[in-house]
Image 1 (cartoon, each protein chain N blue to C red):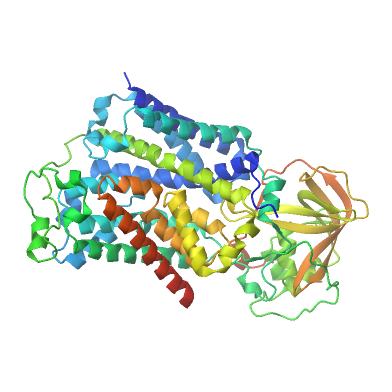
Image 2: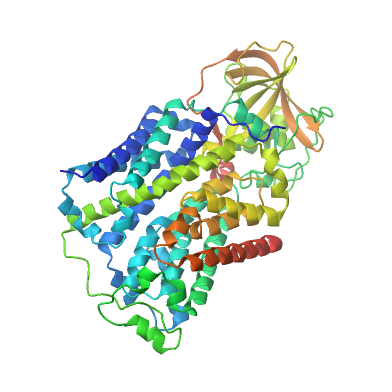
Length: 325
Length: 304
C-alpha cells in the first residue's frame, strides 16, 4: 500500500471546500469582533466584574458568550484589556474560553457534526473549553505577573492606579492581579456610521490576519485529507491515547480557526470521540500561530510551559471522558 | 490617496468576495458544499466585496477610531515583507485552486479514502439511520455469500418503520418513471438494512446514476459521494453493478444504469446489487453530491 499519493486536482477540491465552509463562519466572527472593537468600551468588561476572584474568573469565561471572539482576534483585544486594568487571570480565562464558548463556534460545531450526535459534541466541547479555561485562570491567579507577562507588558506605564486590580489584591488573591485600572480613555465620540466604518475596517483586517492562517491550515488539512491513505492512519485511530495525542498535535500544526475546526474534526470519522474533542478544545487554545501571538503578551517560558500543561490537561480530560462515555 | 497596505487588503478582500460570489452564482458551489451552507457563501462574498470597497474608498481619517486600538500595530501591519507574504498567501492559492479544480475528486482520492459498499454495521438498529451515519468499511477481497432475496426475513426490527408504505415515503422515492423507478445509491443501501424496505425494492427495475468505476470483466461499481457538510468529509459509496458486457467508459464518467435490484448477504451485512440492462454515459448532474435526509424528513408522515 502506497500511503502517500498527492494529486493537485484532488487537493484543490478539498482546499476549496474547506475554505468555502470555513470562510463564512470566520467572517461572521471577525465582523462581530470588529463591532465589539468599535462599539464596546473596554470598561464595560471590567466595570461589572465581581470582587470574588473565583466569580470574576468564571464570569470572564462566560463573557465569551456575550463578547464572542475567535482566537486570533482575541489576543490583541486581551492585550489592550490587560493594559487597561483587567486582571491577568480574568484575561487569560477569557482568552481561552472565548474561542470555544461563543455561540458562533457552538453553531458551527453543531453544523459540522450533523449526523454525529451534534448536540452532545457541541455541549461537551463548550463545557470542557469553559472548564479548562477556568482551571487555567485560577492557576495563573496564583502566579506573580513577572512570571506571566512579558517585559513590554510589565513596563507599560499606567496612568492611574488600581481599581479592580487593587480590589483583588486587597483580598489576597495574588499581589499582581492586574497592571492598572481602566484608563480614562473611553472610545472617542463618533457618529454611528463612523463607528461602523471602523468596525468594518477592523473586521476586514482581522479577516485577512485570520485568513492567512486559515489558508495555510486548509492547505495542510487538504494534503492530509486527499494524499494520505486512510488505512495508514487507522492504527492511530484504534488506540485512544495515541489518537488523542496525535489529534492535538495535528490541531497545533493546522492552526485552524475555532469557527471552522469542527468541520475538520468531523471528517476524521474513524477517530474516537475523545480524540476529536481534544482536537477541538486544544486547537483554539494553543496552536502554532497562537504560540507566536501569545508572545505579544506572555513570557516565552510561560507560553511554552502553558502549552505543555494544556496538552496534558486536555488530553487527560478527553481520555477520561472517552473512557466513561 | 490609499496606502499600499490598504490597496493590497482591498484587492485581497475583493478577490475572495469575487470567488465566493462566482462559485455560488455559477452553481459550481454544489460540488463542494451542503445546500444549507451555500447562502452563507453568497452573503459573505457580497460583504467581502463591500468591505473591499469601504477600505479602498473611504478616507483614512474615517478609520481613526479603530487605529487607536492597541492591536493596530500588529494586526493592521504595515507594508513590509510580512505584508507582501500575507498578500501572496491569501491571494494565490485560492485563485490557483479555483482555476484548476475539476469540481470533483479523482481516482487518487477514491483510492486513498476507500469506498463503502454498505452503510451502518449489520447489528445497528434501523432507528439509528436518522442520527448516526456510521459506515462499515469493506475490502474488495470480501466475497458474496449468497442472495438474501426473495426469501429475506421480514421480521420487524426494534425501531423500524411500521409499514412499507410509510418507509417508501420516508425514503422520498418518487413514483415510477416510465418502466423503472428512479432511485439513489444511498436509497438502495439504506433499503438493504431494513427487511421491510428491501421487499419494496427487491426484483424491481430501477434507474440510478453515479460515477463509473470498473472492477473486472463482469462487474463495475457506481460511486457517489455522501456528504454531511462539505466535499472534504465525503464518504464514498459504491454500488455493485453486474453486467455481461462491461461498457467502454472512461473511469469515473457519470453514468446512468437501468437494471434490476437484488440483495445479497456479505458476511453479516446485506448489500444491494444491480444487474444492468442498460448503461449509458451522462453529463455530470447539477447536484453531484449526495446528502443525508434530516430527521424531520425521515419522520415525515406518509402522504395519503
